[in-house]
Image 1: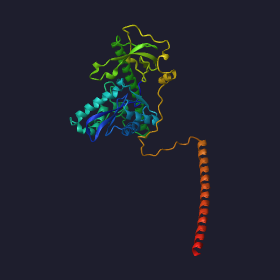
Image 2 (image 1 turned 90 degrees about the vertical axis):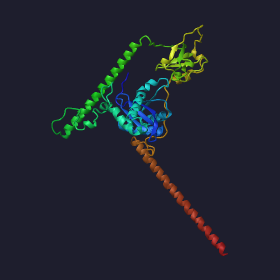
Image 3 (image 1 turned 180 degrees about the horizontal axis):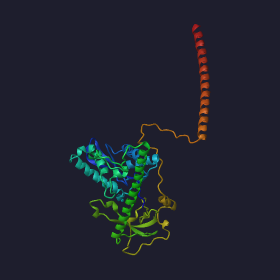
Image 4 (image 1 turned 90 degrees about the horizontal axis):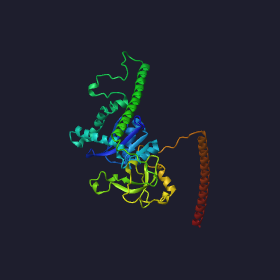
Length: 397
C-alpha cells in the first residue's frame, strides 16, 4: 500500500451549485490525497477548455504536474486527461461506475464546501461565487483530525497568519537574537526547508500507519463476512447487479445476474465472464461483484475446452487482457490555445548539419527557380515587343 507525497496524487471532480452566482453554476474541485489541500474554481460552463485552463493555472503552475489524477468517467474530464497525458505524462485513473468509493475523498469534500458556502452566505446562495475563495482558505487553515495539523501547515510548514496574529513573529526554527547576515539567513531557511521535508515524511508515515490500522480493524470486525473466492476457469458464478443500488425501485429488479461462466482472471484480480449464450462481457468485472453459483437442480455440463464454448478466439481474449493503450493526443492545447506550436529543439551536431544542408539545397533551388523565372519573363517580354511591332506595322499599312 503506497502513500503518495504532496501533490503526487490528486482527486478531481465537478459539482453543481444552485442557484447560479455571477453566471456560474459549476465548481471544478481538486483535493490532494495526502494533505487534503483543496483547489477550486467557479465555472460558467462545464467544458474541457475551462477545466484544462484551471488545472494548468491553479495546480500545475503552482504545485507542479502530479503523477496521478483520479476522476470519474465524465467525457470532458477524459478529454482533458488525454491532453495532460500527452503533454506532461500525467497518469489518469478512472473510477469504475460500480466502485465509486475510490473517489470518496473528493465526494465528501464537496459536501463540506457546500455546507460552508451556505453558512458563509447567510443562506443567500446567490452570492456563493464571492465566498468560494474565502471558504477554501478557511478549509486549508483548519486542523484535520487524521493529520493533527492543517493542510496549510503541512504544505508550507508554517502556521497560517490570521488577522489577530499579525503582531506576532512566527519562525520555523529557533528565533534569532540578533541581525543575521545573508549566509546565516540562507542557512536558517535551509534548516526550515529540511524540517519541512522531514515533517512531510513523518506525515506520510503517520497516514500510512493509520491506513494499516483501519485495514486491520476492518478485517477483525468483518472476519466472518469477508470471503476471498478464487474462481477457476469454467466455474459458474453470479454477478452482483450494482447498477440498481441507487434506484428507488431496486426491489423490482434482480440483485444478481447469472449464472455466468468464468473465462479468465486478470493480474489485477478482476474476472472476464461470459453469458450462457457464449457472449463474453466486454468489460472486466471487479472481484467483489462475483459470487459462487449454487445450482438448485442438476449441475450444468460444460465442455472441457472452454475456448470452444465462447464466441472469442484466443487472440481476441489476449487483447482483452492487455492494458488499453492510450491513443496519441492530437487535440487542442487547453493551456496555450493562442500560442503557435514550437518545433522540437535540435538534439545534436548531426541534426544541425542536416538542417544547414537542407537550407543550402533549398536556397540553391530557389536561386535556380529565380533564374528560370527571370528567363521566362524576358522571353515573354520579347514576344510581347515583337507582337506590338507587328501590330503597329499592320496599322500603318
